[in-house]
Image (cartoon, rainbow, N blue to C red; front, side, top):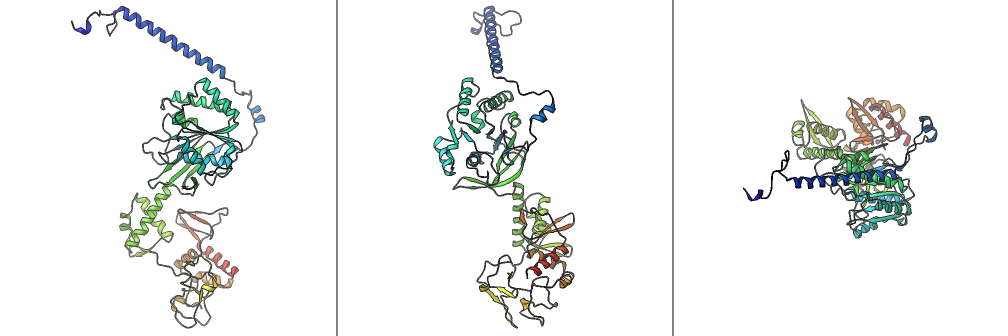
Length: 516
């Protein structure tokens, strides 16, 4: 008999571990005691919930709801981003600037400035910020850098190293009393992972904690809550980012803000949720003031423009490169490479020429600056700010066109006025019997000029005048100057009018007749 079995007799039939009868009785007693404790805890929780429960307003008919509830637009505390009364969950990639984003929101709520420089804030109450992330000294230093003016409307609680067990009734009641006493109307918690210390993947426990948070918010009379969370460390597919932990956390939020960054450390922000849909846009960060500002452009747009830059660089290194050779030098998928080459050509980043059945690409030639105001003048080399007809010429810095002699600084006769139509070819330094080249033409001559102008010159003429071309499904649409071109697309602004090529040229010529 081994030493491990000395003094132990086989247990009753069915006992797999061989406990004695006395040991079995002790086990049953312990189990009975644990069952009693579990039942005590269950009944206690039910009593606690029953004591806090209050029946919500439940009307008998939908007709009554229509009469009681006003048919008004959904109020927005942060225009386009946070409806009044919502729970917003900002999720952020590792070290993407989650706390910086929340401090920017904190400052905008207090001082009434647009959030991220773009989204208007409709809020005049007091704001509470629970900081679990930074030390007190560092957090206050960051707030001071932002230059917050209305500090009397702000309340900060630094909780790093100080757990706040909100599920404990005494703690919850104390928090409700303080929030009510301080008249808090907007509550910021940073971050969720430090505020909730239970198992993060347990939907049941996380859901109970979030319900308790909503109870505190309602009992304290706080309409708005923003609580930040982290993404997981694993790589997320672009557009499918989500916060770490239980799925009920995303379900709980009315609105999600998503903060990401690319390999170049550029930050991007987007939002979705109930009555909220903001496409991804790039943010800039001012290290001096700590402020984030919307500048536009998504990660996909930035990646596309990087490939366009590759196109321009490759063509500059090897003028006359064919499309196939150029495509092999680019990164990305074939469809993206082709689109980047096409975009570079359509937007005058490169020049494409057919050589038999091959298309060859060349750098854009240096353009001779034209005097945009005083016709018959060339731009002086002493005024480099005047380039490509985009700035007003200063008369004192203009060089008049010499008569009957050549000049290396003369600008060529711009389209649509060609040699042989009674206009000077300034690049040759000659003059015709009809006088120097002038842009001012009579309306009668407009149609003649349009019909006699080659198509390539028509396109060059409109681009030089500031028009934008948009190609879709084989058709070309032209937008008048002054409209904004951003990252490969045209923003037409409030006026969505567009013209064909010939109509755009006629309109431009009439403008020049009108402007003299």
